[in-house]
Structure formats: C-alpha cells, structure tokens
Image 1 (cartoon, helix red, strand yellow):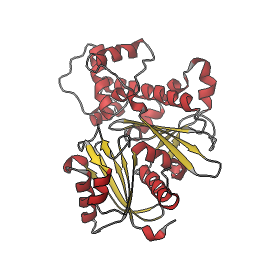
Image 2 (cartoon, one colour):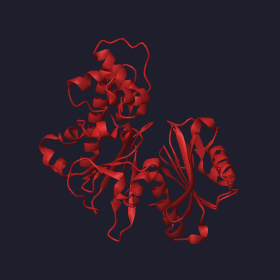
Image 3 (tube, one colour):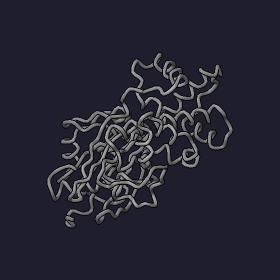
Image 4 (cartoon, one colour):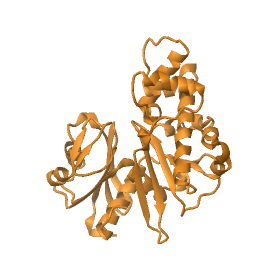
Length: 329
C-alpha cells in the first residue's frame, strides 16, 4: 500500500445520491456523508461541498464511481441530474494528482472479495468457486450489471457492462401483457424499465391497467414497497412479486452468460429494503427456471449485498491498483 497517498477521497455517485468518504488508511473510512445530487449543479461542486463540510482543504488522490459507462474524457449520465462530466476538467478543477473514474457497478464488482460475509445474505445454491466468474446485478435508480474474475495470482479484474439496458424478456403471458402496456410508451423496453426503483411505478401502472383499476394517485417507489411489506395494498404486493421474478430472470440470464459458478451478487438500494419479502418471493424459482439448464442454475449461489457502502471498497481497490501497478482492474 502507498501509505503516503492518504487520505484519499472515495465516492459512489448514484442517480439520486452522492456518497463520499475519506479513506484514511487501507479500507478504513472516515467522515462518510450522503449528499443529494439535485442539490448541486456539478460533481465538482458536490466534492468541494463535501470536503469543505468536513474541514479538509485538499486531497491529491481520488476514486469516483459513476452510474454510466466510462469511455473517453466526457462522461454522460442518463440517470443523473448532472448529465455530463469531463474527467480532465474535474481533475484540474479539484487539483488532483491522481484520480480514477469507473462505472458504479465496476466498483461494486471489485468490492465483492472485500465484503465481510456478515453483509452477504445467501439465497440458495451451493458453495462458490472463487476462481470462477461472479456476476453482479442490482436495481436502484437504474439497473447495474457487471462481472468479476480472479486471476490465479489472487488479483481481480472487473468487467463493467450495461446489461440493464438489454431488451426485457417476458417469461409468461402475464409478463407479455405488462410488456405490451409499457411498449406503447417506450419503443425499447429494457430490463431497467421494470427492474429499478422507477420501474416499480411502471410495473404498478401496468398491473393496474391489467386489472382494470383506475389510478387516482401514483404511489412513489417507497410507498409501493412499504404498502407491499405491510400487506396494505394487493396491487403493491403484486408489483413487488413481478419485480422479484423479473430480477430472477435477468440474474439467471447473467449467470448463464458468464458461467457464474463464483456466484451472483445482488446490489443496489431496492432489494435490501425488502429483504424479508424478497427471501420468500419467487426470485429463486425464476432464477432456476431455465428448462434444460435447471440443474446448472441450481448450483449457482446468489447473495444479497447488505453493506451500506460497498462501492467504497471497490474504488479503493481500483485506486490502489492504479497507483501501484498502473492499470485499472
């Protein structure tokens, strides 16, 4: 570890919230704060506000995870109120000596080996093979996807992806009806349209249309989950049931795509909030329901990540690798 480079700024920027912390020693964090993205005009403004708020004048090293692919200097964020960000300008404005930008699920994937087992809730399957690929998927403001591989020398390499924007696959006639309703509004219906926080509202609308129930007031994602958990609203329960099954579909698609015998890990902010309901849902049944490949899927373990700030661990690993070895893992 390059101890003379601390403290380091670490950040996990979502579509709604920006999470900041100071890494004061390897994987040791201080002054963690969550800021609303909409309260700031730019990423730089949010960083400066955070540092000022904790009484730190300047840092030279930073690692920042963003909810978008990182390709070139200009970054475009479809689910963020900031929309665009320049890597070079950010580095210059913040006077950083070294900064790493990476996709948020790239960071989450790199965090997996560093998360204590207390923060991993198993949902079926058998023991993992640490040298086999691992898949990461998670619904939040959007739907993130990534994979992780381990080299025989013990180092890790993450492969970020935009699988949340892959075309939604209806599993049965009921889901075909939901897709048809949404397709009238969006020419391309991705998995993210359904399997995300905003997707809960879209499923709710589609269910109401399907059941011929008029909507007087569209509930928020938080209201939908709350009323489902307390069993106050059968429409909300039906919405969450569909959500869990659809997540099972994309999780199993990822598993068979990358041979994820290292396990599938579910991150994001939605599932931990409905964990007890999720554990009793049809998620695992849908995950394994792959016809001739059922026995294949039955072996693959699934874990829900319940750590509050897992991406910090991933960006720390990425920054340390960049500093000491000169590449982004």
